[in-house]
Length: 223
Image 1 (cartoon, rainbow, N blue to C red):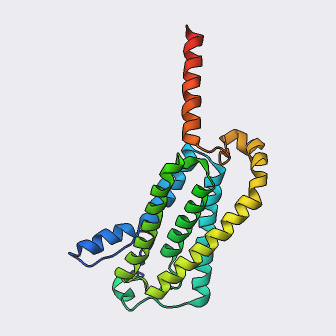
Image 2: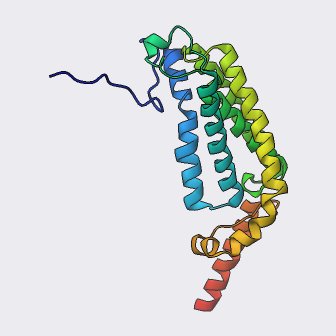
Image 3: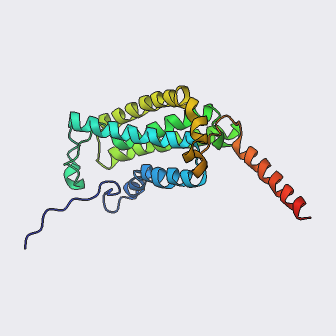
């Protein structure tokens, strides 16, 4: 009985040279976009439900769709190592991983400078910005080191991601933001407690103060 050829799901199918500790580490780094998407934005929706965060995620999805569309049009092959990695069937320009991470780092930085309230105080912003950009550069390096992309392919992804993030940020904060109050007051917004707190300078302090005040009011009512 003959079986059809098998194909791996490339989302988490990352290979590295056996015994290469650096490659092993960078293989995990290549999965950072997956961790951000599943761990970050899914958790954000369940626990925060911020409109800025939701439109951030929508922008990333649009960016990835554009990346795949460009790949289909350009059809540039991956490096020769693609045979060992079993990814020669997919195209390499631009790098989706690089585009994702540079979109994320750029949009994240722009939001923090806008005082979008889920970053804490202003004194903490530079820390999260540095981490975001460091992970973006490291992810880009990992794709070249592991043989999935050429330098030109990851650089193209980085440029596309940065430009798209700027463009999407402008659209969200100059066009869509005017509809945020309508979304908050809609059936969907009230049903799922969708909110926008980007106008609050320090959301962590705001929520902390209100939580303490609510606890005091509850204690006073019980006494």
